[in-house]
Length: 385
Ligand SMILES: Cc1ncc(COP(=O)(O)O)c(C=O)c1O
Image (cartoon, rainbow, N blue to C red; front, top):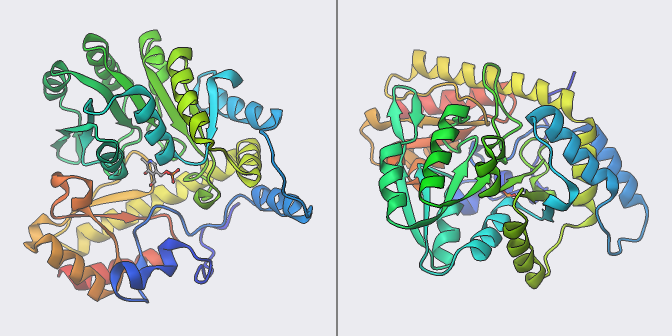
């Protein structure tokens, strides 16, 4: 049994979530519910492997071991039902930088890049920073379930979209896209010849009753028109180590991406290679227990809000450790909403950052100890009642 309830102080580790409260929210002692890393200890085998490597007092240039590749391949075969080959993988430090490389490799300035909103906001920045054209399609909200608007996607793709950004599971609304939904998406991408970047960073955190369906497993066409990314960073709380993988079944696309990465001389450091290798070797039980703990946290918050904060509403997502909380009925402007929450002692993410659909919403990170969440809920109640 892993000790997800165990509390410890993260202050003083130069971690953005805890040590940058004053800069980011103007106050020091807030409960951080924002930036998406967890307050849990990582897998003990990762700590041991990194310690062991750190004990050797030389840190020269390194390469990925055969175990690194084999463990990533075996993890995906067993847990996600697909086979990727070593030559179909590229190691990169992070997913946002992978996104930036893929946009640079597969699109030209001015090209249209489409995504469903609300969505993880660095996707917008990558498009803007590279002078591509951002095209958004609002997700349709049906009670507590968000769906893609296929008619809107069809219309927008018909207007010359080059790349679709798929977030699966989808941050911040927590949907794990189902096979039929991805099939419909693939039909449209095929019809309009749109490439797909599938960001699967949250794909290990899937709650009971849901199944992660990787886009590349949808059809031969989906496999050929997509470049995907995965990482142990969210799953095992090793985001600061910077270790991620790009993979694709299309050698032409992969070559283009590799050319860009080679041109910028970017690589993973030795601790990144080691952490990924060990995570995917020993991490199964950890992930299963983690998902159960997070689901119970999501259920707790959902129930607490339902019973205690009538002007807010949330739901248990299909996966991820993010909850999307609708505060529109509070009547506060976005600025007031955030200020009241901060004044009451919590620091969530501002929902409007994820797109205009997020006005009146906040996103909270439930990857923390239950006791801390209970305290955070008291603060939210004070802010919103
Ligand atoms: C969908 C998504 N992609 C990427 C990232 C960040 O990835 P990285 O830290 O590897 O750049 C996050 C972090 O929250 C995320 O939610």
